[in-house]
Every structure is written in structure tokens, then in C-alpha cells.
Length: 145
Ligand code: CMX
Ligand code: CO
Image (tube, rainbow, N blue to C red; front, top):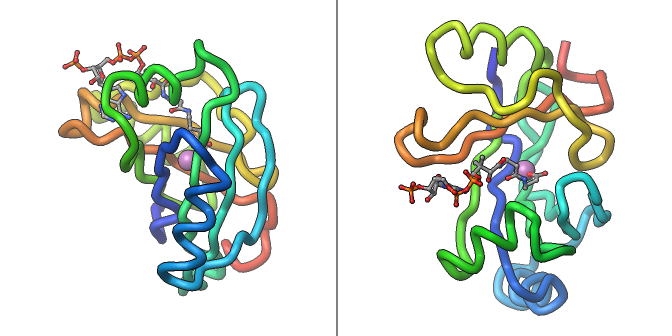
């Protein structure tokens, strides 16, 4: 069951400059940052609020680390902006399978590693009304059960 908005993914050309915009404009601070080589991104997670399922909602600011990354390709076509939304669940495997059964393309056979050791998969934007949609199960099981 999808129980929260886990994050909104925002693509940018310059992560440091974008982090500073969110800090100076809204007062949001970086909760966590990392490089995910598999996804080809350098990212900063800004925690916005805790959620009723024991998780939290974030903004995920994304800068590509290489020219062939999906985010680099998207930025070249669209410029900066909202890249994807992510729903949180305690069971990404089960929810992805259930959604695949409804005819929506799930991009990965098995979830991959996302922010902070989470397990993630994606739904094809062409099957979701133009919205690239991610499903996330956090690494910390606390609160999601
Ligand atoms: N949102 C909405 N539509 C999108 C999109 C996005 N983020 N990315 C691509 N599309 C659309 C394109 O506009 C294009 O539509 P048209 O054919 O009408 O022009 C179509 O999908 C195909 O796009 P493409 O540019 O040819 O891109 P690809 O098919 O090579 O890749 C996708 C698209 C979704 C398969 C790829 O972006 C992907 O695998 N995404 C999942 C991984 C990811 O995004 N990682 C970065 C974030 C990591 C994280 O969140 O932790
Ligand atoms: Co994401």
C-alpha cells in the first residue's frame, strides 16, 4: 500500500546553487546527500515533514553525474524542473507487482538502491499520464509496519 508522498524529484544543472535556493528561499536544509552512480546522479534530500506512516516527505534535488544519465538526457530536453514523483510503501516488491498487473510498465525487474539505502523502482511515464513515478521502501523498517 502506498502511504505517503516520499519525495518529489527535481532536476537541476547545479546542485549547490539549487540547494542554496531552497535554503535561502524556504529555509529547507540538506538532510542527506550522496552520489548514486547507478542512477547517474548527485543528490540532496531536503526533509519537509514526517508522515503518518512513520516515514517522511522530501524534496530530492538531482544533478547528473554523467552525460548518458537519464537526468542529463531529461535536462537537455526540458531544462530544469520537476522530474518525477515518488510514493512510499512498506512493500515496494508487492506494490510494483500489483501495479504491473494493472498494465502499467514497471521499469526494473527487481528494485534497485535509491537514497539512503532505500529500495526503488519506477513506473513508465507514458503509462502514468506523463508523470514518471517512483515507488520507495525506506531502509529503516521502523514506522513502516
Ligand atoms: N517525466 C515525464 N515524461 C518523461 C520523463 C519524465 N521524467 N522522462 C522521459 N519522459 C518521456 C519523454 O518526454 C518521451 O516522450 P515523447 O516520446 O512523447 O517525447 C518518452 O518519455 C521517452 O523519453 P526519452 O527521452 O526517450 O527517455 P528514455 O525512454 O530513454 O527514458 C525513462 C525514460 C523513464 C525510461 C528513464 O528516464 C528512466 O529509466 N527513468 C528511471 C530512472 C531515473 O529517472 N533515475 C533518476 C532518478 C533517481 C532517483 O530518483 O533516485
Ligand atoms: Co527519486
